[in-house]
Each structure stands twice: as structure tokens, then as C-alpha cells.
Image (tube, rainbow, N blue to C red; front, side):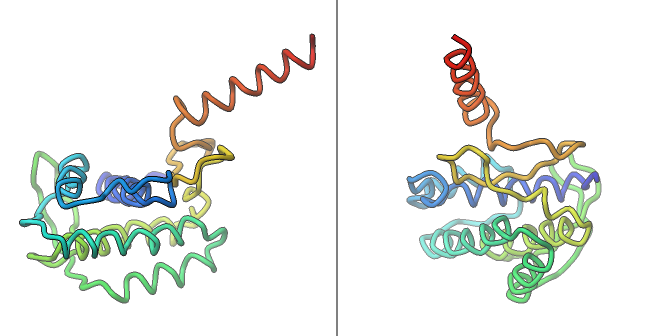
Length: 184
């Protein structure tokens, strides 16, 4: 299943947002408005006005709602969570082409706050995944000591770790060492 560029981008933003919460790594990665500005810049989020402490607290409040969708194991568990999320959204679908991207759809209303923007575009992206029957692509990292979320966009649904260079490599090295110990 291939998702459009804007859906993939929104899914990536949701993953990055959820993974800023202390529940994902033990440390608050959005502690202040400056960190929120950096998050917006790093994720190339368009149409964002000046950010305030209210924006920060509203964005932080979204993280557990998105995380719950990743924790849902089946579509019938995820769909009411997505519906509850989207019930709070002010949807205003419109076509746009900006920043060198071809035509795509934004779902947030013009002038929306950052939290509304993330809620709407992220909620719609998650809805597309659930409707496509691809719920299993939303998961938590398989590393036993990691709580970060990920979206598996691989063709064969084989992505298991939030980052193959850290969590994946660490577990592969540990398994290799265990095999060597057992053989020797």
C-alpha cells in the first residue's frame, strides 16, 4: 500500500510528535516554545504563525491521543480513537501547492493554530491508514527498552524498530553475542 506524499509527511510528523513525549523516551523533548519552533522547522510544517505557550501546551496534549492510535492492535480499536480525534477537528479541505510540492490537500482551516493543524492533518493521515486496512503499519518499536512509535511504510511490512541504527542494531548485536556464547 502506497500513501501519497502528504499523507506520508503527516504520518512522519505524527510519529515525531508522539516521540517527543516523556512516555516515548523518558525525556520531554518539547519543553518550551523554542523547542516547538524547532519541531515545526525540522518537520517542514507550513502555514504556522507565531507560536506561544498555549500552542505548546495544546500540542503536548495531542501526543497521548495520537499514541493511543498506535497502541490499538486492530481496526475496530483504532477507528473510534481516530473518530474521536477528528470529531474535535475543524476540517476545511483545500488543494494547495507550496514549497516546491505538487498539488496536495490540506485539511486544516486557514489560520488554524498549530495544534489544530496537527490534529486535522495527522488525524486524516491516520484515518487513511486505518481505512486502507493497514492498521498493523502503526506500531511501537520492538526493542524491549524502547517505547517510541513508528509507521512501517516498507513494502513487506518488515520494519520493527524506530531506528535500525540504534534499536535494531543494538538487538542484532546482542543476539549475535548470545549465539556466539551458546556456540562456544
